[in-house]
Image 1 (cartoon, helix red, strand yellow):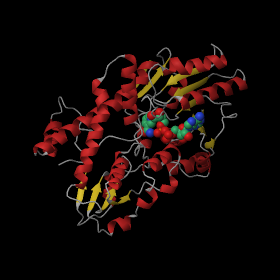
Image 2 (cartoon, protein in one colour):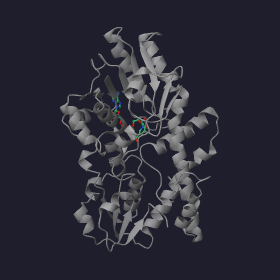
Image 3 (cartoon, protein in one colour):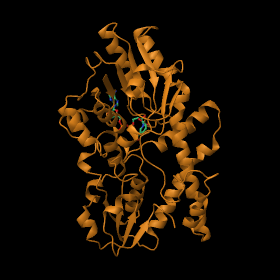
Length: 420
Ligand SMILES: NC(=O)c1ccc[n+]([C@@H]2O[C@H](COP(=O)([O-])OP(=O)(O)OC[C@H]3O[C@@H](n4cnc5c(N)ncnc54)[C@H](O)[C@@H]3O)[C@@H](O)[C@H]2O)c1
């Protein structure tokens, strides 16, 4: 198949590499000239295991190309996949501007090309249930008429940054949302050889899937951390309580995200929880639990800050190991560790940061904007492994598995990933 991918960020670029590796021809379209130039030159715009080799192979075999303009990209294409961002809007809902913009571009390109073979347009961006029917379909109908030769699909993405390629080929499930809840030939071809339970559902069930998953993860983290803070306040061992809790596999099921420790963060959970809270208010569904998740998380971030600097005076020299919300990714958007760094600087600590996935000069797009708006001094704060291991810190704050790369013998450590 020829597959055209709109949005070459963490989701779209990973999909481009994986789909090309399956033997399809992939054309990527992104408004960022820098990302497009980097991809065509063989440089990956994101830090993610395996993608660099896959890009090199895709380029060598002539299966991957990137461009900033749609032009004739859709000529001969079977499938378009939309992976543009849906960041938080000022009201807490998702900003749908990029999805609308790309949908208009696709419709206009199809109109210009005349009546060709039908194109499947699959949306992977996370957005509110009702969007395919209330935003996407009307845009196609207004430009191409009611019989537009377009099959719209909603296909949520379940990859996790840091293991995105593995997750792409081994997804926990595949959800295909269509107008009539039936299968889509193009999506079946795309998922050929990928083993996972497949759900064929209507648009709305498919659209809400990511909200349910992400909010559930946030609920678990917030719950575990509230129990952890209670344990700390009562002088009870949080780690022992956790061990007892997860030993019950009849009712407490999965141990994931139940250990008291870090706050939740990253480019998806906070913004999707915020968007669900907005939907709750907007529809009158009334969601007090969801409404309180971000406040609970903020309370936890504050408690972690207090714990991290306990016994230290301002001016103390502090190393933070890990800046991204998890090890192995350079995505800094809504990382709780970025908040922590800002709090440490504001409180007057002499901060240095070790995170080998972050290269200040390599950040690009929304990630670059977020990083520098929160930490304008980022470039000066980052230190090398040798520098970090030279020691002399009053405290080392361990934020994520990044610290495993360091020899921290003799250091005064506070591990925020696991409350004891
Ligand atoms: N990052 C994840 O782990 C993850 C996982 C599942 C779902 N999602 C969802 O997938 C979507 C994309 O997330 P992401 O992290 O890849 O975002 P991202 O910000 O990394 O990438 C989005 C890309 O879209 C591009 N773009 C914006 N407008 C465009 C246009 N008109 N034409 C072409 N390109 C355009 C941007 O330049 C950017 O490169 C979001 O809705 C997100 O919620 C993300």
